[in-house]
Image 1 (tube, rainbow, N blue to C red):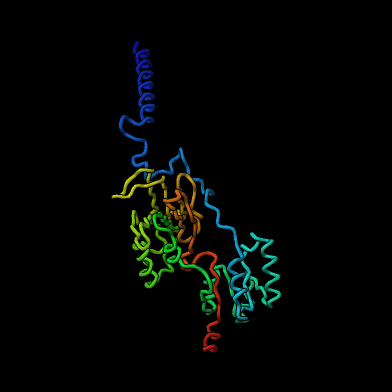
Image 2: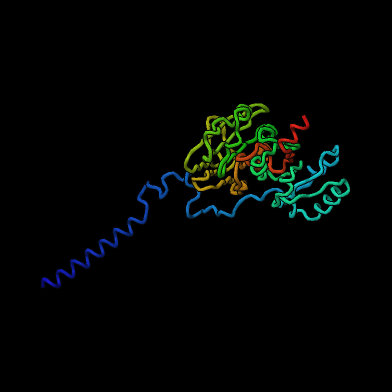
Length: 311
């Protein structure tokens, strides 16, 4: 009898344990499975795929065409950009125009033009660290700054900024003072490779109101549903923003009504939502790890000794 009783007790205990495990899988009454769903919007049931990013604007030679139209003969060499391949037909026209003007192309992967100490124009900001290391001075020729982009946003717009990798190294003191005027107030060079989110309401032409701004060593995430309020501001859309600096995950995500509006590139990924038209009017990226100017800006690289001779 004792053996039968022990087997029955063991079976009952086993069934009780199974019941407890099943009960633990379900959230109890009033206890959500995610404690703060607005901060954890990238949950398993709605994952943010790493490849789901906003496409970069198609490459355009328009700035080069404008420059060549105004050129005074000082442009003799242009450094190639890998993105030229995106616009093959336009490249053929551009190359022919340069040939007619006696302008030669130099390869970005080759260093002979640098060792030859020639002055060259380029539109790939990733060249800058190499040029600085080789004692070149870099000057802006044409292009909008981050300050210009934020100033040009229409009144009654929402400006969303999300940093990937780093967004602060290029912010010297002068730029920090200027950017304070357009709502970028907490990010400084002391926040190297920090995560950073800024949601700015451009209420009037010169009025920039920070709805949310934060820097962090760890990753950041923020969500507002349509109809949510911050003080007297009512969100006209669903907004989900994530930022992770280099050491915190290294990504940027901006979702407006479910649409991905971040290019997920190094620096400041920016989306401008026009409240009058109820749509994202602009998607930008400024690689503020290196420069304060937009991706298609044109620069001139001049050897330091060349500038001394010119002066």
